[in-house]
Image (tube, rainbow, N blue to C red):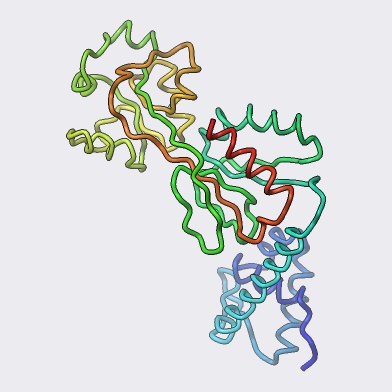
Length: 291
């Protein structure tokens, strides 16, 4: 058997992940006929059938399932080679892809990144506003800003800050509902919380107050949406001081309340630590977020 075409192996991995030739074509920015030719050529070269054609798309055969593990390992090795090659690049110009939560990406990063652009105009920045754990190894992002310590393998992390949390309500809401005088009084107010996330529920429980998701009269796991509902006057909510104290339409309640803080972690792939560009942005984010 001659050396396999790496492009055909990439197509194999993409088709297996998408479950169809058309899905793989979209993922690889190719065409469906090209994907089909790649799979046919690979099957002919290996002398096996990799997929069964069904009414629901393409399903891996038992042989295909076994070979997919090896193909993915080869794809991961290729990704590592690209990471090492990029890490050794001397230029600081180029693109950096950063992932951060919706709230951080909307309210905290813009000022920081604008200052970075003024200092390093040759660095292009892409921001992925997402609370999902991005796969740094596969280059979904170069740097992640997280409120927890990432635990992915081959990832370097740095804790850069602790963000204080405050309790807020819009002036319009307080004028109608009254200002709570104690933390217990908050239980008699409309409270904005998360839908599936349990961070706020756990905070209440840590304070000795048992609540569940039905306690919140408005719920959204999108932190920006939840905050905008607080600003709009729905009820009482929670946010980082950097965001809440900068909003003139709200008032901070109980500033002396012992609320837990949020840790801020930066993460980047270990093999990118030698990249001048990534190191520059990583250190700049750490300095500004820490301040």
